[in-house]
Figure (tube, rainbow, N blue to C red):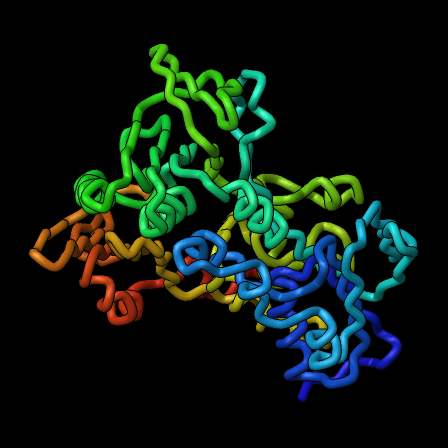
Length: 394
């Protein structure tokens, strides 16, 4: 068991998967270290990835809560302060200032996540575009979905496609818009994307790709979307899913180095002593990976580091799972440029292997349909993005 001096307080900002995973890892190693968890939300623990496929299952907000805040605090013996806004971090005085008071720290972990980007679109109803990135967002989404029959989704990436599939299963008409020429444009090679699109279209999803939306105006109880070609269509609800943006403003205001995310080394240390970052907000050695598996590996390593045993995070190959029952998909992108895809389509799905520029070394794969069952065996053959020992830290 790793031990730490009892006067050492660890303050964690954020009660999402990153923050809670870290607390759990800390408690596995030390039952008594002082932990304070600050959350803008209620502190109830839920799985954010479950938000994009909850509607068809009829899941209420309450049903998505895995552990209520009070039970979480009791089980993990953590001071959980929910419904609080962090206003600033004084790294010199090692104090977090919030709407309910100040919290001194010996070590601070920024687990502040990422926010859904909203589309830069004109029109009187632009402020009616929804995004779903929290339990409160899902509650608003469910309320607005009452009586809705036709929904537009802006963004044909992972979240947009998951929502589209889920809405179709729930019997809702769905149109998906994107400026890209294919769905899952950042994940799938063209042939795989074509099959993916075909199967979602067979389930009733309508894609409008290579298209720019320029306006969103009121239209009765709903909205009217207008494209750059002048085509207009009315919807009961418009959902934005154009991608995540790491929350870096709090760190930047505190003098912490930021890029796309909050920059860290492999110990998850930021540029400021005793301040760390974990999860969707973190840019670890240049990598921004807004998925669950990097959080899991990061939490395990960071817990040991915080308790006195410096441990670099190691990322094995981590396949990305797309939860679209109409066409299940798993992809592990190659880390380096160059090389080529070799794809084969069979009645039960598609298997694609990416070979590096040497033409022999497998460094990525994509699986669709029933082929997704091969993901673990293929992942075991791949190098991870962070597996070798890094040079000495700062």
